[in-house]
Length: 242
Image (cartoon, rainbow, N blue to C red; front, side):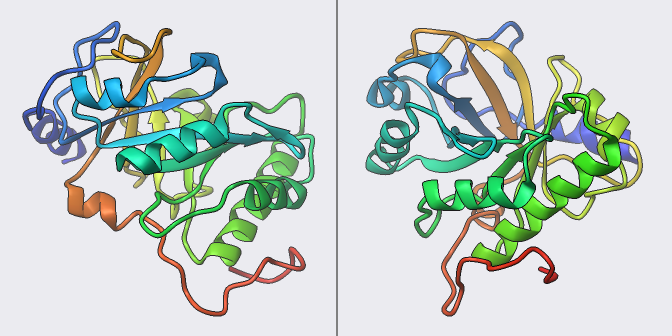
């Protein structure tokens, strides 16, 4: 049944101009990209003039103290042009998950309609698996408790199968698999976003960029966005449940 579902998904036509990568863009409903300082300055107006860009993720933070040098400019530009935006944190397993969560929360100011925060989990750096997963859990619960929205987990398919399968299955998943075949995950997990190429050529961006699709409709994407709730505060400890 899972294979049939993926096949049906891949039959859905693209909307508008395709963004060219090492592969033809897979059939999907919504297209997006993710960027960091590695793409240098981006002409977002040109990007949206030439492509049907439905969403964009921007690197915000890494570890306990690093802030992407172009986060603020990319974040502001996406708001100005009206593209659905999301911010992601690159997780360093050797650094306290709570400290990393606070760093992200202090750096990223969400506005109503922004996508849920993303935790980028793709390295172990020699840390024991149990310790890495526990610190990641702390990050996820701290951010969720603070913002009252469940974060998205980004990882590649191999890392997911080796370390994450069955651990965080109640979180939305963004899976990297550079192939013309959509990710197939073990267990009951289903991906929401698919990063299908890291060699995209997009007008307005001078370097190769990651290309993504969202598995769903615009209304489904809206349901993955943050809207404020009264009474939410910055977390004071890591012991409470989300």
